[in-house]
Image (cartoon, rainbow, N blue to C red; front, side):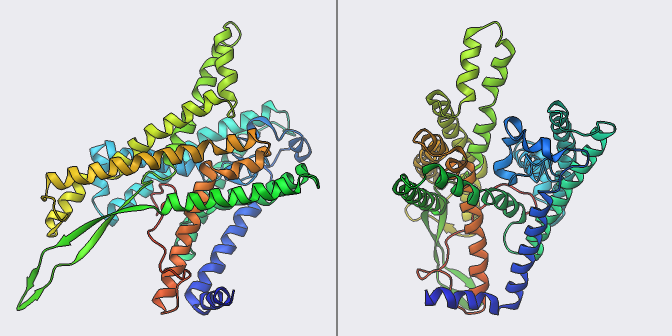
Amino acid sequence: MKKFITTIKNIFAIEDLRVRIFNTLFFIAIFRLGSFVVLPGVDPNQLQANTGGLFGLLDTFLGGAFSNASIFALGIMPYISASIVLQLLTIAVPYFQKMQKEGETGRKKINQITRVLTIIITLAQAVGFVATLNAEAIVINQTLFTITSMIVLTSGTIFCMWLGEKITDKGIGNGISMLIMIGIISRFPGAIFAEALSKQLNGALLFLFEMFVLFFVVMSVVMLTQAIRRIPVQYAKQVGGSSLYSGQRQFIPLKVNAAGVMPIIFAQSLMFLPSMVASIWADSNETANYIGATFSDFTSWQYNVVFGLLILVFTYFYTAISVNPNQIADDLKRSGGFVPGVKPGRATSEYIDTILTRITLPGAIYLALVAIFPSIAMLLGVTREFSQFFGGTSLIIMVGVVLDTLQQVESYLLMRHYDGMMKSGKLRGRTETIPTMAS
């Protein structure tokens, strides 16, 4: 406890770090306040009575902004969608690959394209959101409501994007990821309170057991996020002028979960398709009715089996496009490095690819288990809100953002010659939670 208090004092003793922490808290407070400002023309009383259905779909990431029909109802999610699209384009399209290799100039161009694409996606999503509000009959006056709401929602998303960039520049951590984490974690106190009330006094022991299981799941996700396989690399001796520099021994860190949270996001987006397609023939086909009902229930074993298999496939797919063994081998060869016992070039590339394939399998299996664990928790009696924190996208994003933020704080402390936050040394690796072009 004494070491913890000393660390907190050291953090606030560094002026730059202290200012960044307060800036982050200020921007987060603005983001949370905006989540409760209801769109002009919406009846808040009617809104409270219609918080089910589609309104609960995005609340996990937006901290209630979607169900509140607030000016930040779409939040930062259109920007995330645009970032994912641009990231895939930089892999598949030569024009974007060339742009990515142009350094700072190329990065600015990609960021600008991402912002424009964000506006387009936001406008498209705003149409569906406003149509839902009109269908729910919670709009006081529909005159000009659609046009004004689309403008307000798009402006809200752009403002959230600006807040995220300001947190990155003036605060601590990746701003976009931070806003998503805050939206997720803002629902955590209410979920715990609802779970405690559902168990009442007779279920107090069961509630404590659930908290213990939650702690264990969080720690296991931390280990999954931080787990790496180190490949030793030896650098040849080099002559600089009249001096001879001895070869250095370093390591290539290959993450067990190199794909991060992206496989779950991709798989979850595809899991909406069966029920959507089945709804077309739902009135005339019993098989379509069965498929629609089965894949609309995320606790069904059919849903979870398909979901888990998709995560396995997408984990290998995303790892293959994000980690290039050929490029790693070429970079080693150009810098005079080699893996002991392995020939440089093609043999090194095959060696790295073999190791990456082997460590990806257990990472993919565990990622699939983490993704379906909320369904298991709900089947075992945990409330729907609280079960979302037992795994899935929410937990992985929260863990990744917290580790990334701690990494930055740790670096500030070590630069000022303070002891780090961990007795065992530095936090290993920098964790990317979601792909953002601004990061």
